[in-house]
Each structure stands twice: as structure tokens, then as C-alpha cells.
Image 1 (cartoon, rainbow, N blue to C red):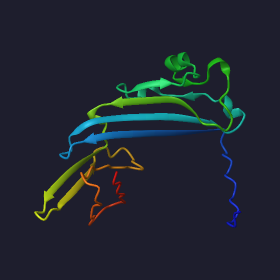
Image 2: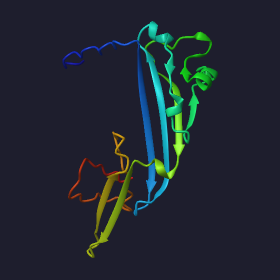
Image 3: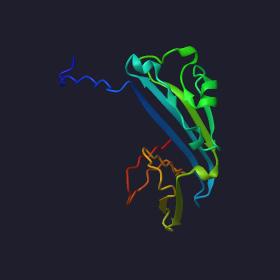
Image 4: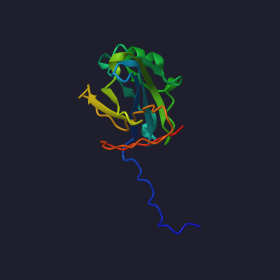
Length: 175
């Protein structure tokens, strides 16, 4: 039984296809800001919104792609067409499924130079059983836009921290 106002139906996309790119960067750093590991993983998703969109071809400028990254096409994508012409299309002239996103290209990279920001951690023992920690973050790649950045800091205790000043939001996970 729901007394809330009825929800408006989602707007139908006005284009034959929708391309969505998702990229995640996972970095582990020491408290001095040294990178211990860094990995980039990304996926290009295609959603056919119309019958015409099911037959879409996506052209990729492979020359512009970083050569240090590894790339893989979905098993149903015509790998030969991608390798020779940079075209992402399904094998055998088949169309993409209608109204369902399909990952058509993935990429990955592991290397210290992939981290888009640096973090320095400055712990100070207050002498009262508490530790004051200052954390500095700096963007090293101004050409990127970061969204949904999560920074995990191990506290060594399940006690919640007393946060005095923060740019953003924080969440304490006692586990």
C-alpha cells in the first residue's frame, strides 16, 4: 500500500544509442604519499534505444588510446574489425540488444603514474592518548574530472574519530 505520489515514467532517450563510460582508479598509498599500487579499469557500455540503434557501429580512434593500457573487446564484438579498423560492432552483422546495456570494450592499466592525486598523511601524537592526523590531497592531473572519490584510512581502532575539519563528507566503518 503506497500513499506517495505516483512516479513519473523515465524519459525515453531521444538518440538511437547511449554510450556510457565508467572508469575506476584504485590506489594504495603509504602515509608519506608513496604509491604502493595503482590500477585503472574501465568499460565502454552501449545501449541501443531504437531499432536503428541496434545496428550501430562505434568508431574508436585507436591512435589516441594510451599504448600502455590493455584493451579487450566483448566476445560477441567483431575483434578483427576492431583491430584493423577501430570499429566496435557485433560479429556476423547481428544487432545490439534493444534497451539493454552491453559492455563492448574494457581496458586496464597498472602503474604508479596512473594516480590522479597525491595524499600526504601527517599523524601527530598529542601525548594524551589521542593522535591528531592532518591529511593533504592534491590533484596531479588537472586534465581529469574526478567523481565519487572514496579515500579509505585504516584507524587501527574501532572507536569513531573526532573530525574537526573536512572538505567533503566522511563515514566511519568500525569493522
